[in-house]
Amino acid sequence: MCKGMAESSQPEKTSCPEDEQGRDSAPWRRMRPQGAILVALPQVGLIVVWLLAHYQMSGWCDSPRKLSWCPSYKVLLLVWTTVYSVKGYASYLVWKDLGGGFRQPLALPLGLYAAQLTLSWTVLTLFFVAHTPGLALLLLLLLYGLVVSTALIWHPVNKLAALLLLPYLAWLTVTASIAYRLWRESLCPEHQPQPTGEKSH
Image (cartoon, rainbow, N blue to C red; front, side):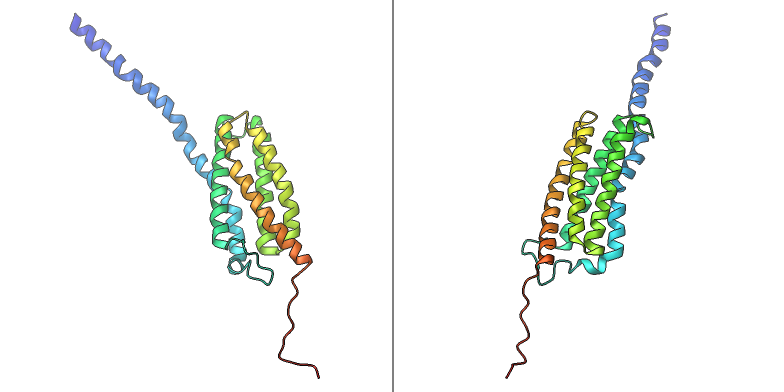
């Protein structure tokens, strides 16, 4: 009798914990592909800019008005790639906490994210393809305000996601400083010395 009761109770002890673990881990396993897509999505614009202007990037600061503190294009690409990856992961956290999919609560948080992501791609295009630092600076100011608005909207949803936008804001500040210097010196270029090979008599 006791043996029969032990045999009948054994499946309950082994099956319940496994079922609970399966239910807890299944949603995370389903989220992983979407998370990878959202992390990689911001890199699309960077890849397009690289394909359009990679032959010009190596000397993008090598000019008569070169900035002494201007970073090399390799540093720029590395920082933009890192910042974009962090920003993509933050968007995944918001997407996951709001239930995923394409639900109505995602419209504003991810709508702002899509807008500022598109604007940041435009800034990169103006920087490296069109070489118009003045227009890039104007869009950077708009982008800065848009990222701040996105962080404020994300904060009630996921505080970590909002905090992950802070490095992006810091990098936008550096980028805006570079754009301002390039724009200012394009308006007032440095005086170029005239060739001394010919002398007037």
